[in-house]
Image (cartoon, rainbow, N blue to C red; front, side, top):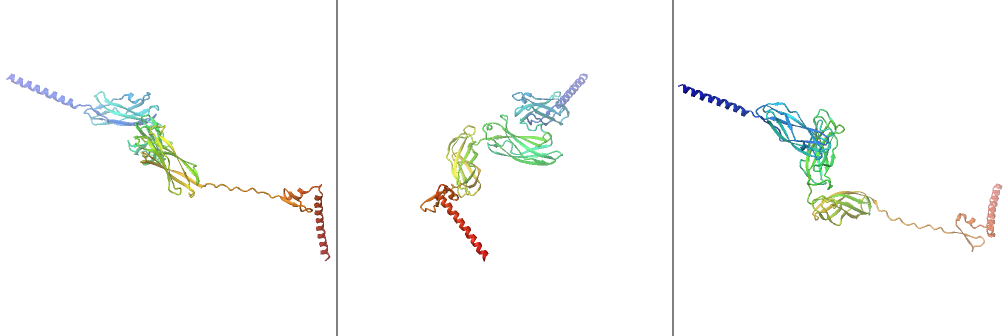
Length: 462
């Protein structure tokens, strides 16, 4: 009997021990330290500036955790010259009960010499005591110096156009549409947006453009529309490179208090066949009716293929009535061949005599890809006046000589150089004939005086 009771007691103890151990094991299995962070965090910052962003740390375990370590490899955030991006983390370290979270902040501050590029590395967030950790990928895109003091103030940028990843080609006009919102409590004056096209592969700023200024009231937004043209320099465009557009919205004259940045990536691709008219020059620039005009047209190959038998056509359907075609250019090399990717083609025409004075817009078109494709532009030409006629040659005036007849000898004549001095020219004190002329003149005068005197006497007598 005693043996039986002892056996039952031993079995009970074994059962009790098993239950206690099982309960302890179950409780241990439910104590799981774990945390969660986003998969990736991205930042954009200009050279010499600074920017901050936030990320969420969540306790997704079954026990309390306290994040006490955030680590990364500095080598991933340093350029080839040793210039580095300083990363600072803050806002973490609170005790997180299961399912709670905290917001941490990361600040990126590159030096002004850090190369324009995207720097990427792994960041590890840990509670080293509880043994919980998670990682995320941090990407810092360093662009040209935009906001001088980093992003600051109440402006927020929303890029409406273009879209991220859009493709463009050389000489294409990119239409920018950017919405800027004022999240502050003060009205902002003279707000504007700047766009900078950057070759991220070569770390080169290749083009920029600015919008007009606008006032943005508190809590309101404004749309900024402007254009940026893709360059046509083969040294700046390589379709295998990576490109991006950096945007800066700021209050002009108050950038150190109101400035915000944004970014989108884009691609530059060449078409197989593509040409543009780079320049048109008319000589003379102001022409006259009936005048011969020379047009010099510079054409540029912006495609991937060499072009053969390229020619241009000039047309004006108004009173000029121009429709002339040039001779062909045998070959123009592809876009990347900077020495032979262009040509200047000359065309001449005569302005009609019936053309009216005024400004005309001449259509200038270049034909390529065996004449199947063309690209055109309009160039103004001013007509003013007509070509002057040759002036009539005036006949020289020949003065006939003056002839004075001799009173005593009609067969003899004297020629004077000037009629007013004919007598003086023919008078000679040693010539009896000259004195005879003088005596005859005096006698005539005496007779005239005597005649006048007799007339006076007769009048007085009556």
